[in-house]
Image 1: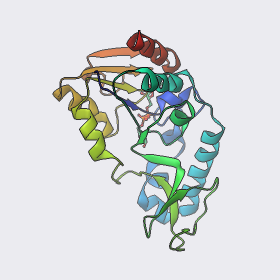
Image 2: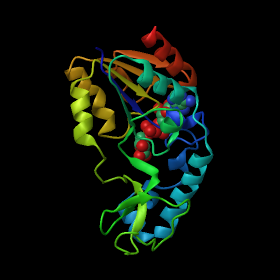
Image 3: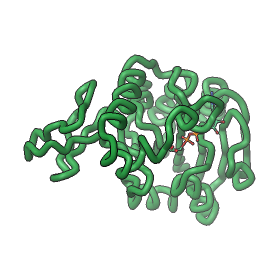
Length: 229
Ligand code: APR
């Protein structure tokens, strides 16, 4: 039975009102990555970093899944073969749209992590510098989000899925950040068919066998309907 592996990026949540990173006016036009998305930035100014993630946590909590999120959940529920959903996104819109399981390779806004003892817990709406860890009490709570220079999560499991994929789709990602941007090469080596569903050609668009351009809320439901027909 056909195994489908899907990678999503910020573009799938754009129509839910969440900003992307590299589009016009995106998050990396508003903040310097080194200030808000690196361990060094957090050490330098934890209040700035907590403020950045508190704002994103509030926006994500107020956002609704869009037809693209719901269509991937439908595919997961109705496709007879395995559908593995990997996301670079830290919002919970895939889950809100009915997807289960979801592999968050860059962590989640909903998660908190203790930098001292690795304990994880559900993040409060607002975190602050010196956030106490519920387990070891150290003042070292941080967002459980993977920053630049840190290892993405679930990589062993992800590479095992990529090796077995019959069909790989990348949705709403610019193909600018590794290791996610190289997933298409991994599955090509395994002989999978590859499709990119994006608003515009990504940096890796030439590495896909098939491309469908347009807003995810239109392209993804149409693609899923074809697969389930
Ligand atoms: N429908 C489909 N695609 C869209 C839409 C839309 N409505 N709007 C934007 N896009 C596409 C853009 O064309 C772009 O290719 O989504 C992509 C967003 O790219 P990025 O902003 O770079 O987001 P992403 O690829 O997820 O970034 C990867 O970089 O900063 C790190 O950790 C962060 O997970 C993030 C990673």
